[in-house]
Image (cartoon, rainbow, N blue to C red; front, top):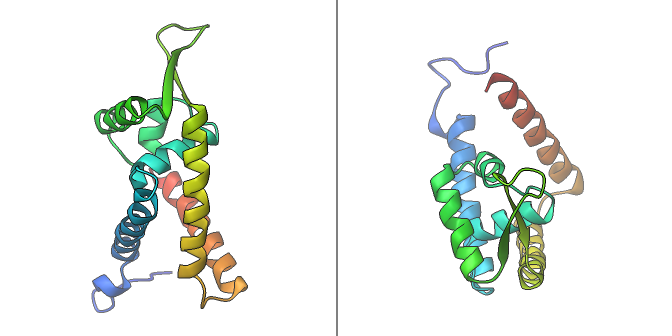
Length: 149
């Protein structure tokens, strides 16, 4: 089945364009929510990923679509703020594990509450079925894209 043709492919119907525009708008809103806590949206995304068990810089960079150098700088800033700490792995000293400090975990959870409120406001005029369908479709799209990557 072909979804697009030369006659039907426009930015307003392009999955790539719509995802990119939504991503940019979402991060602008996320930055506003996180600013109240002294961090940026990407810093919060990094912290919440660490909270949920992603503990190395390379994996964070892949998951958050950042290059390793940019992710290292994000981690540097978070470490300077006392929100993240780096520890050498006991089994393999070449590896550096990341964890949230007590303050980092508190900031991440306060931001999470703001992010939840934000997304609930954004989706306020969506039905529960529409929101669940969007989430399921985006998860399916991600799995499909990972297959092609």
